[in-house]
Every structure is written in structure tokens, then in C-alpha cells.
Image 1 (cartoon, helix red, strand yellow):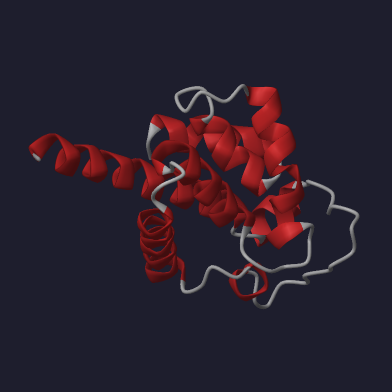
Image 2 (cartoon, rainbow, N blue to C red):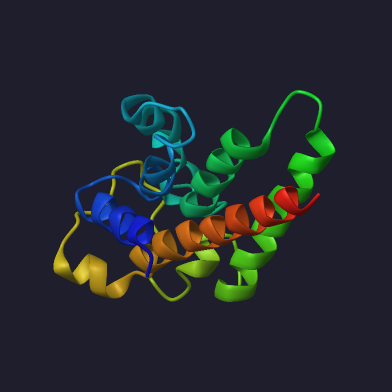
Length: 151
């Protein structure tokens, strides 16, 4: 586990949603203040507003990737990066869809968040998915920099 991954897990344990936890650990180095990062990513927890669509950790990873790699001239390159990050997450976890990742666990789409209890953390893979997304993006950033520096 990387230091960033552990910090993201701590953010999740402190009450941040899954998306906030991932974006939050990258915001400073990417030029985004923490409070703004929390606001931007607040709607993406629980698979986008608890609708159980794209996993919030994946959305947070994509937001950080946008800050890290995007400019107005490279949409195709940015989409390629997003697809690669999604592939890596899916290869590791089987899906990027929240309801599929939570298969076998009650997945209410009520807008009211589940209470964070010990049972919640034991039953759901969310905290591990937070760590996975952070590590996937960290590794990708490292690989990207290596390639860029060799050109």
C-alpha cells in the first residue's frame, strides 16, 4: 500500500465518499485546493449519487487524470488514458460498475448514505476499491512520466 492509498482510505474512514477520497489525495499536487476537490467529487459517491452506476473511486480517478493529463487539444489522448485506467481497474476488480462491485450486498439507491459502522466497513469492498484506484493512478502517472522523459 502506498502512502497516498493509505491516506485515501483514512479520508474514506473519516466520512468522505469514495470519489472524494480518491480525488482528495491528488488535489494538492494537481493544483486543486482540497475544499474545491471535495465539492467537485461530492456527487460521484455511491456510483454517482448512490445510483450504483460507475464506481465513485473510478470517477475520482478519472477526475484526477483529467487534472493531470488534459488540455483543450487532446480529447482523444485523454479518452485513451481514461479507457486504460478503466481497463486496469476492471482487470483487478471485475467491473467498474458500483452495483456489480457490490454484488450480493444490499445496494439501496436511496439518497440517504448508509451509516458508517464496523459492519459497513467489513461488508463492503469500498475502502479497498479506494486504495486500488489510487494505486492504479499512481502507477499510471509514474509510467507516463517515464515514457515522457524518454522522448
